[in-house]
Image 1 (spheres, rainbow, N blue to C red):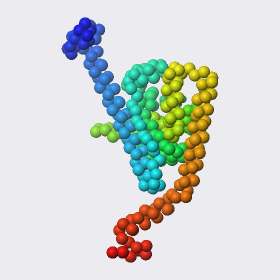
Image 2: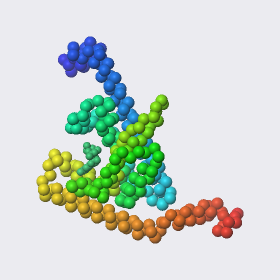
Image 3: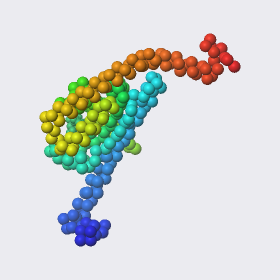
Image 4: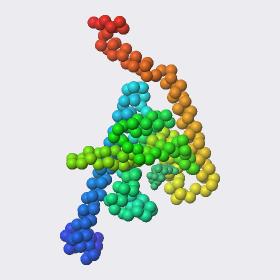
Length: 257
Ligand code: GTP
Ligand code: MG
């Protein structure tokens, strides 16, 4: 370590001659701006995650089941940002990140049933502070390898001390079955460095089709189960009956006490 000038000390005159005071100041400023931008994306992620948690809460009270299995968030790391800008031959700058990349803030919502994916997407997009920038429906139109998910690029405002900023985020909504297929496919593709042979391609696609069939059968089963026991009015009636029972009110409205 000692023979590396960068690690000798913190004084700027310890840096190699090519790194002068001005360069250091510039780097510190850029590091700060980058951290600030990432912090804004983190706020946007929190905002959207909360929106989904609220929808989950509301829905579970209304229909007595939770549509969301998990919500995961991730912030794209600096190395991935650099390589994505590089691969698209875009400038490596704070402005370029904000202008060109839509998936710095990522939110993945995993549901048990396909219908809930669309219900949640619609409920989110109805909110008046959410602007839809792009929608890719890989459920109705799967990718050639069989990948399925509903992708939304949205803009959401975040309110800071002195300003309001619109931040972009990528939301992926999918079922548990779609999520497990995508996670295994990602692992295998990574292992093969993207080079599946034709048989492997066909097999992974077949697995995706099986997983789609599973989703469709489970969704039908859910509808059969909930048609019997949980339409909205029976839940409200059961809730009212429970409130009356607990507060001691008889069916005809007179008090039991
Ligand atoms: P990039 O964001 O540059 O990759 O291009 P794009 O915006 O056209 O991508 P797209 O919206 O199709 O996909 C973005 C994200 O979806 C990826 O980063 C993955 O997380 C996921 N994804 C897309 N296709 C696949 C796939 O074939 N397999 C898996 N496992 N994930 C995928
Ligand atoms: Mg993308």
